[in-house]
Figure 1 (cartoon, one colour):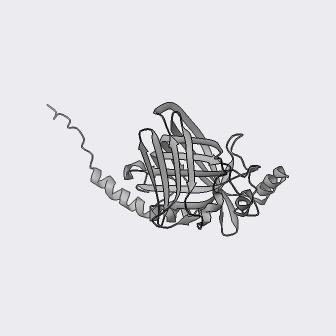
Figure 2 (figure 1 turned 135 degrees about the vertical axis):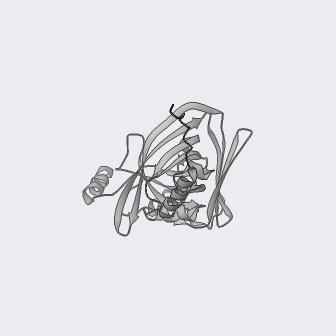
Figure 3 (figure 1 turned 30 degrees about the vertical axis):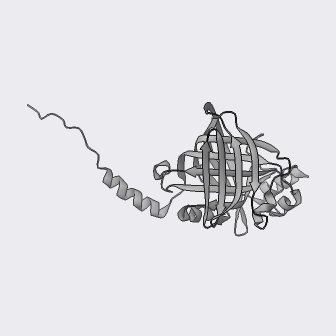
Length: 257
C-alpha cells in the first residue's frame, strides 16, 4: 500500500533570501500596487516661469498647465523590491509627444522621495531627484490633506474633499520625458487606478516663496484642469524607456508651430 501524499510546505525563507539579493540590484521594471495617490493638474500663476523650466527641446501646453502626483506606498509588500516609500513629483505638461488625445507627455521639474534607494533608481532614468523629502496623505471625515516636505520643511499642501471608493478605474500609459546627459528619453509607465467619488479640490498652497518650486504655484482663483484621487493605484516603474530621436523631437516642435 502506497504512502499517502503529504501536502507540500513551501519554504518561504528561500524566497526571502532571493528577494534580498534582488532588492540590492533593483532591476527594472519595478511593480507597485495599492498606492494611495492624489494626481492632478492646474493652471499656473506665472506661465513665463513655467516655460523657463523646460529644456529647449520641449514646449508647454498653451495654458502652461502643471501637474503633481502626491502618493504613499505604505508597505514593502506593495512593491517588487523598492520597499515602502512616499513620493511627490511636479512638472509641466508638454506638447507634440502625447500618449493619446487626452494624455500629454510630461516633464518632471521636481521629485522628492522618502526612499534613498528609490531616488537612486529613478535618477538613473533622468528624474530630478532630491534627497530628504517625504509626503504625507491624511484622510479624515472626507477631507484629504496631502503635504510635501523638503528636508523637514512643508513646501506644498493640497486640500480636497473626497467621497467613498467608487467602482470607476482609470487605465492609461503615462509618458515622462527626461534627459540623461545630452540625450532626451521617453519613459512609458502603464498604470491602473481605482478612483474615489466626488473629488473636489479646495486649496493648493505653495508654502515657501523662497523655494524654487514656488515658480509652479497655481493662479488665483485655483483652476484645476484634471484630477484623481486613487484609493488603489498600480503601475510599473519604469515601463518602456528609450531615447527620443531627433526626428521625433523635430516633429513635436513642428506640431507646436
